[in-house]
Amino acid sequence: MGVVVDPGVPPEVAGLLRANAPLLSRIRAGWVPPADVTPPRRWSPSSTLLLAATPAMVALTAVLLVSPFAPAGFMVLGTYVFIVLVKIASMNEVPEDHRPHERGVYEQARWYDGRYLLPEDFDREAGPVLARAQRAIGSVLRSHVNAEGLLDDARNAVMLPAQEWEIARLLAKLSALRLEHRELLARGIAPEVASVIEPLERALASSESAVVARVEALERYADHVADAERAYHARGQIEELRARLPRYEELLAESGADAMAVTEIERLAEDADVLERTLRRSVRSAHEAFRYLEG
Image 1: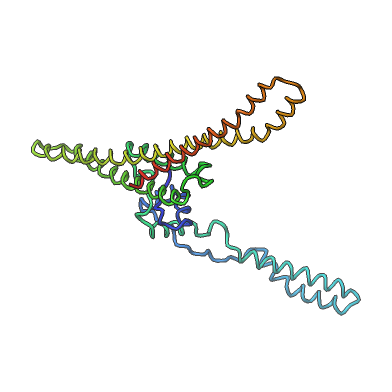
Image 2 (image 1 turned 180 degrees about the vertical axis):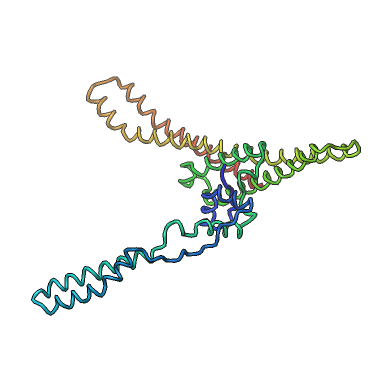
């Protein structure tokens, strides 16, 4: 199920939140990452040795440069300078463990608090309902008919994530109220309060039914899209066979086969037309289901 994020959250932040569900749970529980303090640099033995060797290297280089071995002096000087530069670069590099990933997640989680929901926000009844909605939405957005623009892909990209967030938000609220209601019942209810409890339970049941109805509408839409998807793939296969038809006709003509066989093969064209009409009907049905979701 994962983290559900309000579609109004910037995509890069939404991706960060979705990728860090366990860390968000810890933050929700009150965990705070340590302050991002760069550890003090320590002089390593190699740094000390390099510093101590500098006067000797300078003296050696000076002697070599004024001697017949001047080229060797330049080589020694260049090598030493290279070693020093590599050492300086390694001292300035920040270790991977000290990069402020957790701090960044923490700050974004605090900034967008209330605009994302975690798996623990949903009770046993709500979790499967949300999973159904997410499966339906995912099947639509991943479909070829949506990618090819046969559906209203732009509206799908906006409306379906909004539907997912609204369903998740309502289910989380319903889960919280159900938990409070169960805790209240567990403490025991006085007879005088029983008459008040029943309307509350009806309100919870009615709200759940309304959310489930939304999910069922999404599933019907996904079913229509699945019908269109099957017709789309079948049409592609028929078109591929039609492209090969001349080769089959040529083979039949050369082999002197019964002319009825040609007629049977040419029925592929009719099948393609039927599938084209089926695809259009399926797409129209999906559009009608989409309008029902909006209304």
